[in-house]
Each structure stands twice: as C-alpha cells, then as structure tokens.
Length: 340
Image 1 (tube, rainbow, N blue to C red):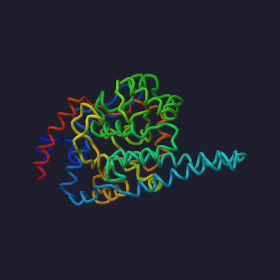
Image 2: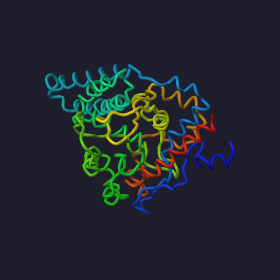
Image 3: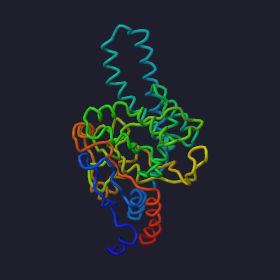
Image 4: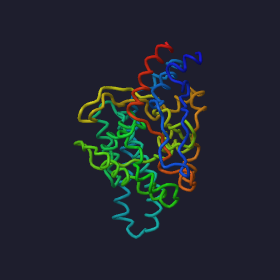
C-alpha cells in the first residue's frame, strides 16, 4: 500500500503508533494528546485482512467458570480452616494470605474481567452470576461496577470525560513523580477509582455497588512515545489467565448494540471477544504486529520503574477528545475499502 494511501486514511498504519510524545513528569503535568481515535479497532481490521483465520478464536471458554468455582471454594474452605481449626497458626495465616490469598485475588480479578466481556459462559446472566461467585472472596464488591466501566473503557479508550481509567487532574498535580505518593496510589487504587466515579458524575446502575480495578500501570501507562497500550509476556500469564495479553485483548472486540441499563448515551459496546485461553494464538498468528510493539516481560519491573523513577507519574497516559475519537473513526470505512 502506497504512502499516499496511508496518509489518506490513517498515518499510523499498520502498527498504529502515534506521533505524540509520552508525558514526562519533570516537563509537564498534562497527559499526552492524540488527535485521532484509539488504535485497536483499525489494527484489528488490518490484521484480519491478512489473517482472517483469527476470527475462529472468538467465543467463550467454559474453563473460566470452572476456575471461578474451584478458586472460590479454596478461599471459603481456607476461611473455615483458619477460623475454626488452625486458629493459633498466626504465621501460617500470614503466609497463606500473602502467597495463596494474594494470588487468588488476582485470579478472581481475571475471572471478573472475562465475565465482563461475556467470555465465561453463553449468556449475559450466566456471566454475571459467575462474576458474583468470583467476587465472594474479595472484600470489596466490584464485579458489576467493573463490568460497566470497563466496557466504557474499551469503547472509548482515552476519551476525556468517558474513560474512567484516566487519572483526574488533582491526581496528576498532587502525585507527580513522588515515589511515596505513587506507592500510595498503587496501594489504594480502589479508593481512587471510587473518587473518579463521583467526580465524573457517573450514575449508579442496579447491579453497581463499589468499583475497583487492578493491573492499570502495565496496560495503558505510557513507557514509549506513540504507544498507549502494552502487553506483558512473562511467565505469570500462565497463572493469571493470560491477563497480560492486553494489546491482543483490545485489538479483537466484537461490538453489539448496548442496552440502556448497562451504559447510557453510548451507541455500541464491547461485549464479546477472544477468551483468555486463545489470546496467545493471536500473537502467534500475527507475530510481526505484536513483536514490533513495545511490551513488558516483568510485572515487578513495571511497578518498580513506575514507583521509583521520577519521570513516571499519574499523567503518563494519552488522552483524546470525543471529537478526535469520532474523526478517527470516520477513516475506518476508507481503511476497510482499501484493504478489501
């Protein structure tokens, strides 16, 4: 495809790396700004034009339901054991809480994420129920609220006033590059997330109680110029249900009409896509796309670098206006026509 054609529909083709520069704490307290839509829908169109076989990976995977039920039973049984049988085993409780309990919490988070996209069972209600089951062992009820705001995040990644994943202005100004404050941000992120909901005047829905989120640094905090989403390809994906394959996860959604009681004022919604068990296949098929994007290989280093290095802070994200998002989306039709 000629360079002129690229300029017509989207200069970012085919990897969809933007021309914007990442935000650096010592230079600014503002987000980086993109003048087009998020890159994932167009990268999916480009990849599918070359590898249509990826479409066979769509659907749900019932193994997620099995993991949700078994892992929840483990935590419930452990609660009984340490409250009735091993009541004096203080160090055992601490060790179990950190090694097993902490790991299980991340697995529950991954399960809730899959149910939010209706990837654990065949119907929406079945997925909601599985999300609530996975939420039993988490002190904060997050499953239903996470579903609502996470799907908004997919549909309008980085759009001001809609994407709840974006830090507020006071977060950027107060936290800056402070190591101590960034550590507090990571430790109390559910509280910060709740404050964002109030500040953005999000109205509650019948299923909502209290939202929380995790893994937010690796996924969309900018470590390189022009790239706003990052995958993690380390060994911990085997334990935590491939939750690190975030570029692949964003690249292959299916959109359907939304219901008013799920999200108001939004015409379409990401409800179903490729389940976690098949995300590595996407990378294996379209290797040249994902290996040429920046990615992480260590979750520890992601958090260490973010907390300890002064150049990183809450403003290390990219944002766009709704107008810019819509302007970029208008180029999608031209892209499809030129790839056909």
